Length: 249
Image 1 (spheres, rainbow, N blue to C red):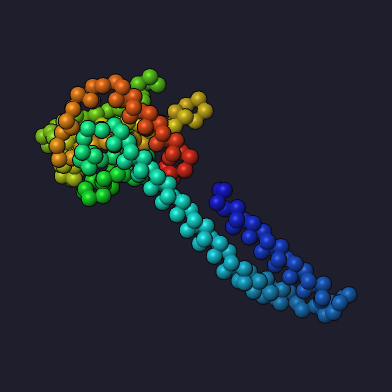
Image 2: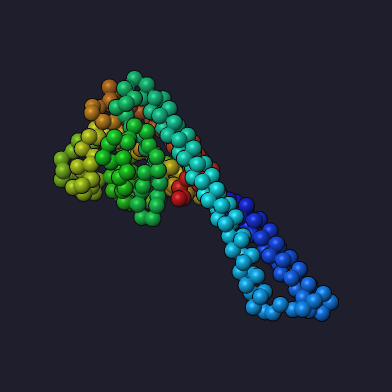
């Protein structure tokens, strides 16, 4: 709504201008100032004035749309840089280019990738997941169904290279999903929660995963302090998403 004010202001000015033109025409009409020009004339005059105002209004709308799109791109670029910094902070002893990160947000009945880091060259870079599907879908279920003291907890799969049947049964992946994610060695997903009054709103999931090989230190997944660091990063990402209205198109 805040982005509509320039258009509303121009619209008000246009209406006032059109009204002033019509009033001036009327006052120069019959009676005090001269002959009336007729009802049809005023209709045609109104249409002509509206047509004159339309290009200006369209220009304002296009400029506003471009500014909004540019701002969104800048916010997503900032979020991508946060993801890169998070990978380097959480996994300092690893090759950062073998670790990926992305943010998925709820859109309808699916989780969709909002942005990522080190994701573009992989077939799952824009993969969607439904409720309880994959590690991220399990996080969605836990975050929305469990009590407050449990809903924030990350979910991880330290060994993602399972047999096809296990991936279908445990993680509810389809054959296509399995093919697109065959390069993933491990996954760690943390819920993105945003406080609204006295409740927590589930925005989406912060995902980290590894490709090509396992981590040097796989015991990190059992470290409570590591999980707390993940939650702290997720809180920061949630704030960026909420402040920028990034979970809406």
